[in-house]
Image 1 (tube, rainbow, N blue to C red):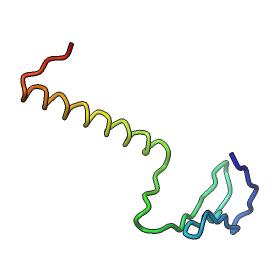
Image 2 (image 1 turned 90 degrees about the vertical axis):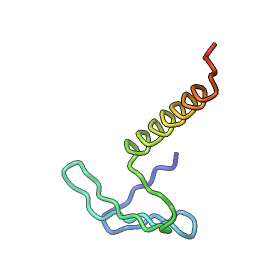
Image 3 (image 1 turned 180 degrees about the vertical axis):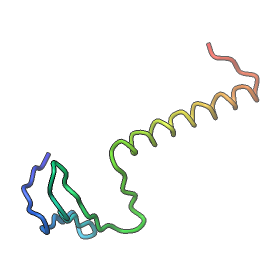
Length: 75
């Protein structure tokens, strides 16, 4: 993991397309502004983990529906 120290207003550049600006620092909170291509999804970690879990559950439900459709049982 790369750890950087930045002050408010300073920017971190990732590749050619991503810029992260420290917008504000205060009260134990850091506000970041992220510039990235529109097609690149950006999520807070807790939402990303929830989306992954929902996707896994969705796939499991679809598999169960297919098994029911074809009359297959779990062994």
